[in-house]
Amino acid sequence: MMRESKFNVHKMTVLAILTAGAIVIGILESLIPSIGIPGVKLGLSNIVILVVLYELGIWETLLVSLSRVLIVSLVRGTFLSMGFVMSLSGALLSLGIMILFFLLIRKFSIIGVSVIGALFHVFGQIGVSMIYLSTAYVLYYLPIIALSAIITGVIVGISAQLIINTKVISKQKEKYKF
Image (cartoon, rainbow, N blue to C red; front, side, top):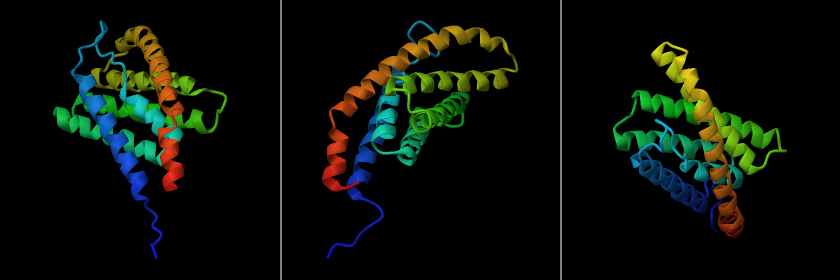
């Protein structure tokens, strides 16, 4: 008789694959130069974060997102640097607001949740920049970077929805009961 386990090997495997995907995307994206606006990135690894949030849950999303931030910073040699602190603060603020909108404000689509997350990621980074640089002049950068966040948030949200629509993860969940 097979012993019931709190940890499902299949779920852990899916999480490991998704985490690896988010890390690889994060590393590859960090190698792409900014798209005309310094510091602006597409945030493509957030596609994975949204898929995990909608398909697997909150704790799993926290695990994948924080693992991605930590491992990408270690691989790139930026751990505990200003870039790491900005990435971590943006990720935590973004995750917090996306979870809030996902759980409590169900009127938002995955695209809306993605845009809100992208905006709050920027707000977290701007906040850290203001503290680090001891100036509010960084706020002048906010309108253009917020507009970029809205555009990339829409792209990320649509991409995540397309992946969810394939039902790849939901089929795994059904087949392996996690």
